[in-house]
Length: 354
Image 1: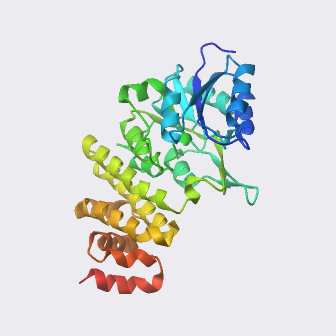
Image 2: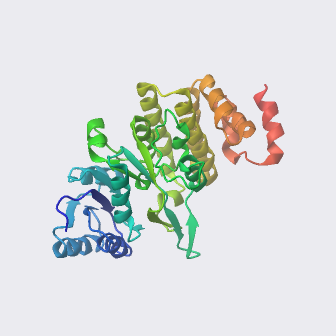
Image 3: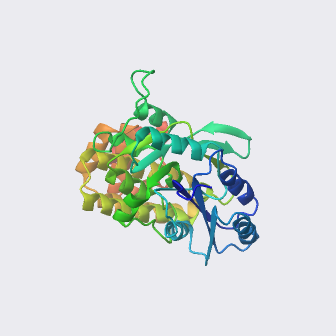
């Protein structure tokens, strides 16, 4: 066991007795032990706590176990950060797991760099629990495009920032897909939002836009378990209202830090993406209340900001223009039946021109 460990892995755990063994086993059975494991039991009501305590007693030099009353994922991560004493820290949800070479590959990357970057971006894999298939990560294409070298034989590691490469902000917002320099987070006095869902959104923009060095760990990442009941992405009720709250939080931060036009545009790209997705997924009874909150949010964003976004990184400029104009207008309730059907585009264009 290396007493000068490089990396801490914070694992928030809540009612995951079915998966927690696989998660912890993946962290214990690493090819290189150069890490610490911090498990935060967020008030579990099943056997999660006793399972985690058992591991902590068996591996006292490797695992720190912490219990707290249920406060949610963001609060559990914040609690875990208080126990970090290593140069780097990352987060792993307790129903996911790491490949056995994760710590070794992270260590080898730092040896090649000979310095600690503020952020290391990973490329995870998706495990579909229904089909039992491994799928590509959501933003794999963007990841490979951003970090690839023109010369395939060039092994030089790219060191980027969002000022030079704002497309970094198009990567998946997952907090688990990144490794962070601990002192960097401490100097920022960084904390995850608490008491809301979608708590990864503001941190994604806050951390990446503040980082002075962002590199990629191309061949290691966590395995994300997908298609399970209870996942935040599967929820379709009132909790989707939280997305508006966290985007207001991100916009406040963007205005305070004076994002560049390109950085702001990528934030708007995520806002538009989540708007369409939430309207598509939310239960009918919550659609109008959600629309009302998005209407207020969009009215507060100047149209010139949206125009810059549409002209730079909008994937579907014409349709998104319609959505933005409608959400800013008194006619926003027309979106209650959702609009991404080709046959209604012309009708909506006529409404927008009124």
